[in-house]
Image (cartoon, rainbow, N blue to C red; front, side):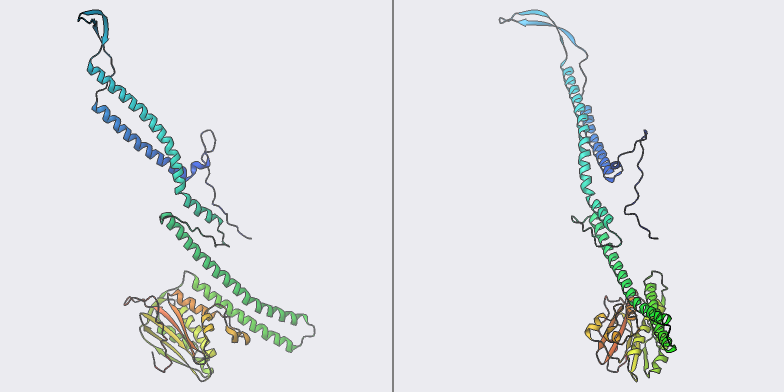
Length: 431
């Protein structure tokens, strides 16, 4: 059964109005909330400014409408200076006129202020909607790209342009995360493809030999014994491949046992495991191990890494030769080195020797049953401890594999890169 993840997150249920009607979708958006917030804030600030102006005008002036008038005689003056009474008229005092003018001014100010506030609120809604839309445009680009990204295709990137603000930093962070995920998924797919290719050959061999023996009625005992030998070799190779894959997966897991590790003890235990095999081939394993080489790491994983190097050295070193296993400290780094007197590697082989499933031309021509994961596991283990693995090899002379591991005792700062020299020079000296 295949599980399919939803392409979009579940929608938030819309709120219902009292009449059972649903609110529009845009009401639930951040853009709408920002618009309302900005508009309300601008409205309140403007109302406070206009209210302060109105209060200052009202406090500094006396305003009152004309409520009382007086009766006065009205006279008409002739050119000769005589005055003729023409009746009575209503008059007011000058102070009352000033107060009436102030009153009308305050009423007009109040009226136009309310109109201005209403217009400003409507205009702020439109301006806030536009500005919030432009401010949230990068967020929409991020969301749109995230919707288009699938687990099988992580090639899309946001690549947000514009000022280096918080949204640009968020987009760059997501792009960086996608780069790491794409690289991790690519390595996983490559491992699955390579493992499938490597497992396909022994499975085909097993199937072919079993079909030949089981379906052939005239098969003899010699044919059956030969088929059993072929199947045994194929299953042995598959077993080694599965063990190497499990070791790789186990070291990739976040939960591994880290403790104080003595590199000299790691190198000595790994050498002891291969003493008998080396003696059977008349090969001597020489130990040059310094004391006090402590790091924090996985003891078993590091021993497996040194063991993989010794396995290759014992297999490739000629009879009667010597293998050196040494450990020391140099330039702020601690190291374990395995040196052999085997055939060595040319420049092209040195560039690919740590690749998964790479076995070299000689191994493929000789139908070697190795999986090609040994040195890849060595590199993976060392890099998981924050270290580096280096190879110094000369064709016809031999090879030296060095595991550089950072110092963790706090006495000295570890440089960014380990020394580039071979700690076991071929001059017969000890390190």
